[in-house]
Image (cartoon, rainbow, N blue to C red; front, side):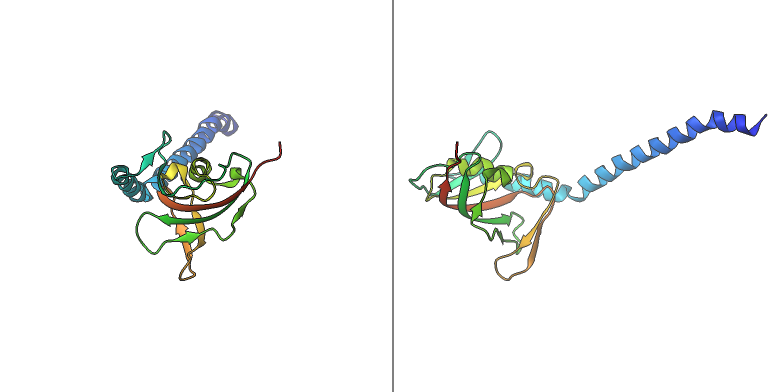
Length: 177
C-alpha cells in the first residue's frame, strides 16, 4: 500500500480526534471552573433563602431582594438617567469584604450591574435601600476587583457570589428626550 494513500485515508480521522479532544477539554474546563466556585454559589443561595424570610425584605420577580431603610420623596431614576449615589457592596460570605464605588456620578444607569439597574428604579431621591443580589444579578460567572473602605486593601468578589449593596440615592438628572 502507498503511504500517501494511507495518509489521505487517516487525515480526516486524525483531524476529527484533535477537534473532539479540544471540545472535551473545553467542557472539562467549564465544569472544573464551576466546581471550583460551587461552594460560593451554594453559600449565596442558602444566605438568600434565609434573607427571604426576614421581616421587611421584599423580593422581585428576578430574585433581587431589598429592604427600605429610608424612603425618599424625590423623583425616581429611569434607564439612561444619570444618578448620583453612594453605593457600598459586600460579599455575603462575611469576611473583611466591603467595597465602595468611589464615584458618586454614574453617567448612565446602563453602566450598572443588573441588580443596581433594577433596584435603583424603586428608589426616589433621598432613599437608602439595602439590596441582596443573587450571583446572576451581581457579577455572574465573572468577578469584581475593587478597594475596601477600611483598611484600603484590594477586594475581589468571586464568580457566582451573592452580593449585598447599600445605596443612598442623592440625585437624578433626567435623560434629555
